[in-house]
Length: 180
Image 1: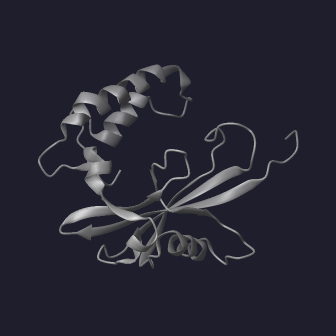
Image 2: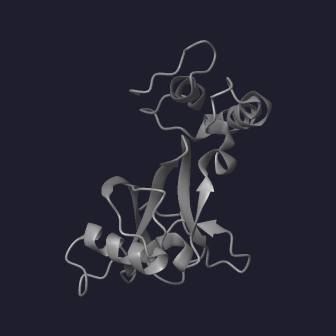
């Protein structure tokens, strides 16, 4: 390994989900970008102040939303190089959580956070009226273009992207299996 060691930060984010009137809801806060797009509650883990990642997450969520969390489960960790643009600043290792709570909690209104309809943000997830039209119209064609463009990028041990798409998205008659 050459060069100076780059500093890193552990960032914690939470997808906070509730059901209100049989509709899934997700809690969002204003993002830090100039356009203030919706964002998930997020904050860094500070080992000097937080004993565990989960305690840090609960503190950040409470500070940003005023909402006490119920059930929390760690979903993923991303630390891949190349996920961030530029070389300035620390390398961020992202740890994502799913948190379940009650949508009738009135705390979000106190601190610029709000519940949003899950399907308005993720319309391709709404199968209540059958397969969403946008899957075949936009998403699947884009995924197939990606698979075609990435043919030369795979390693010897990696299945072709087209095979991964069939398996992950149930394309070409393969059928989707929620266990995979």
